[in-house]
Amino acid sequence: MASSGVQIMCIFLGILGLVAAIVTCAIPKWKVSAFIGQNIVTAQSENEGLWMSCVTQSTGQRQCKTYDSLLILSADLQAARALTIICSLLTSLSILILFAGADFTTCVENPDAKPKICLVAGICLLVAGVLLIIPVSWSAHHVVRDFKSPLVPSSNKRELGACIFIGWAGGALLLLAGGLLCCFSRPQSGNSNHTAKYYSNSDHSNKNYV
Image (cartoon, rainbow, N blue to C red; front, side, top):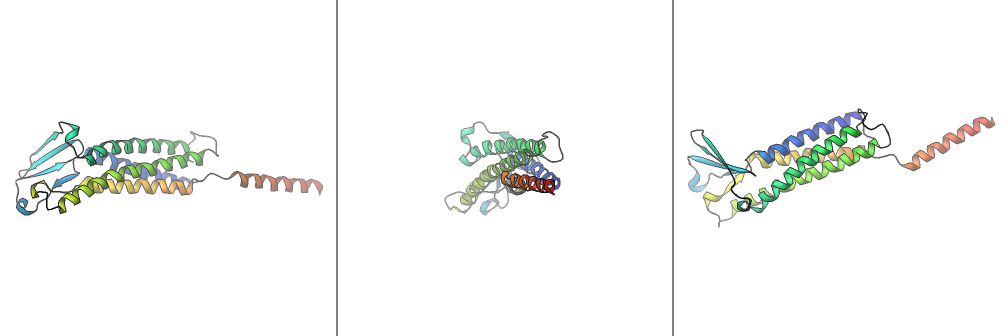
């Protein structure tokens, strides 16, 4: 069974991963303007996110507009909407499950069920980490491919935004938390308990004979 220190650390990592997933989903910093070629000196920069696109003027004024239709988004951003939301919900559920099965809580009084509950929480955190890494990696692949393609005009080329790196970091934290829980939350096997009971009964019987 995992110690309380490992469980507290996993909860902390899970909360950090949840914050990273929410920031990645909400902030419009997935794709930013690439200042190359004729775009080296521009009066504005564009930022694209999952829900809106923003234009920042050289004076500091910023204007944001939500997308008029889901169909105008690329396939990677459409999938990222669903995956990041599912990741946030699954991470929140995993943290609650981990709280219920942690050693320092009394939500579950059965000591044999606690490691199983923590193991379920660890598996959910692993799945959440994968769900967060997939969309940001897919979007990063599209950005790099279009950036290196000579068929794409310089004005339409984009660079990786801050949300891509935040998503990678958040996914790594969730994978780390889930891996630790899976390693340290192994339920005790029934054979070991049966063997221990057998030896204890044998010792007790030997004492009676003496």
